[in-house]
Image (spheres, rainbow, N blue to C red):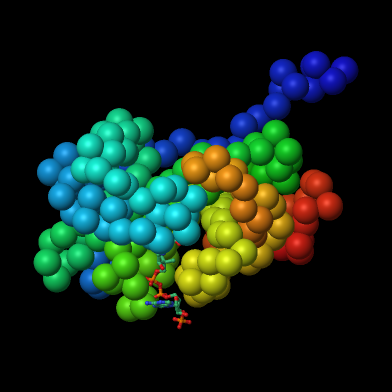
Length: 213
Ligand SMILES: CC(C)(COP(=O)(O)OP(=O)(O)OC[C@H]1O[C@@H](n2cnc3c(N)ncnc32)[C@H](O)[C@@H]1OP(=O)(O)O)[C@@H](O)C(=O)NCCC(=O)NCCS
């Protein structure tokens, strides 16, 4: 019986392809990354304590930035965040595949992804990331008809927690995240449901649940 059930398991990570998408806000343009963004990307990704807060080591060489930039372009799921003031790439926002798809059965038959973001340290504290996140979640809900968006942060990352508060994400699970540096960090996974839909979730795994939304 278990095997039969597994055959009918429906995955919940929605389709996403950033190709051809441009999202404009008051101060920003979000568009696919280009190879010509390398200089801007390295400029912010090489600053210590920026990537580390998102689980990756700051780039110690321009070659490393080039390698990751090529991945962004290949994988077609990450926006470059462009400042309208100077036309420079000042951050990134990825429409990531969320993990534990088999465990989070509350999302069975629903469409969603997890977002992740980083902003150049030179631009912190101006409300730019909330502006980008709101525009992207509006696009995912209104244009792509997603049902939900997840976003996580490490416990110590109060700045990212504030971004998620401001964008309406509610704390939903307490989890331990694997970082790209091979370490583990305890943190919070937050959830935003499409406000245009009446979605009722039946939550799995009560041991990690903070609150049912
Ligand atoms: C998290 C991050 C994207 C926030 O972006 P932002 O555009 O600066 O967001 P906001 O301007 O809304 O600031 C959020 C909070 O950070 C705090 N903050 C702002 N500037 C700060 C600074 N220079 N130093 C310390 N804290 C600061 C404030 O408490 C602010 O909340 P408030 O508006 O209620 O006062 C940015 O700090 C960043 O890129 N950090 C490194 C990568 C990262 O953490 N990514 C997220 C992984 S989950």
